Length: 454
Image (cartoon, rainbow, N blue to C red):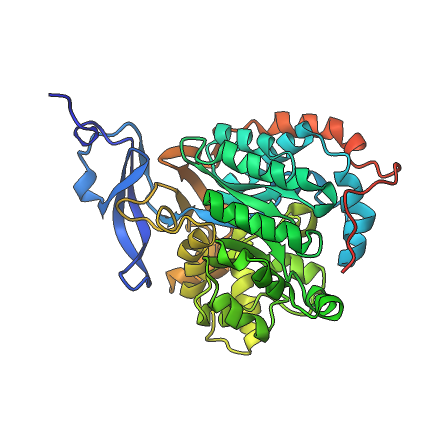
């Protein structure tokens, strides 16, 4: 008789840790002196350390003094933009786009995108991010990096209406070509840039393609209050109303930022025919001095999940989702004037299950439980900045940092062990990227890929 996979050794056993778990009401809890058994890329069991003492396995990790969390999800970023980190500083949004970022992006080659994606993936793995939603150009290169380095990703090829029909067609072709690739770790989306750069006809066509092919849509909308005010002045509609009128809200849609979502938008989001989620990246909003932030509480009240994000490192300077979790909690308290809102456990819920739902993977990742993919990070809380621990959730959200992540696992494969990256050669990436930077950042040509005019 041929043995079943369950008859053979487990591929990974993590033992001696405290595991973040969710109960049947999705409340956060912690199981101490626990062990996680991984088989076939899936969590087989969460049990006691004693129960796995004699379990045969290909790899065993002693995680005493560490906390096992579901891998973090970066729900909206532009990974290759790490190559532009620190290039456009202390500028208003319009100048940031028109004077620096969009001129430089007209120089991008596929090799620049690949190197930027490699560096970004290294940064995210080291920060405990196991999955990211990317919205950029030359995305075949990003897909190749994801496949090689072992991460999970929702990828979309961005386009503007100024490209003509070909931009939308290439976005679809990319999505169909890579959907389900990298052994299922890559999912794909259609990726119109935003309502202010993609016209109603293209948005409506995108909605039709999304429904026809069963694809989600990932785009920027109502990024800030100025965009909403301009849209109302020019078109008599908010950006969210544009999404409704063009059928985008009848698809599964991930909206980046949404700090310009206003009260009149909420009924449309609540009644949307598709699954709607919003990604919040609070550090960038502070840098740009935007007057509002993502209305997390209002969205929660109408059942719209809000996932955590960083945006690209050109605006955020970092791909640290841990920082996004901390800032989201603090800014929500300040904005709502309520220290009891967005508690540490609520912030962890946004960082885990809600972020997984935001990228359409709520049934596969976001928790450590039997049947879920084994996307796990181990966090060391033995440092002086995390001791003593009176409230473990508060320690994780407000004291721990991404540098406390010791081990990162995706689909049962260890991508980082004891802070050592196993799938990306960072020095080689940095060296080649450095050689290419002068050509990449040149703005003397006077071109730009688009104009920001909202």
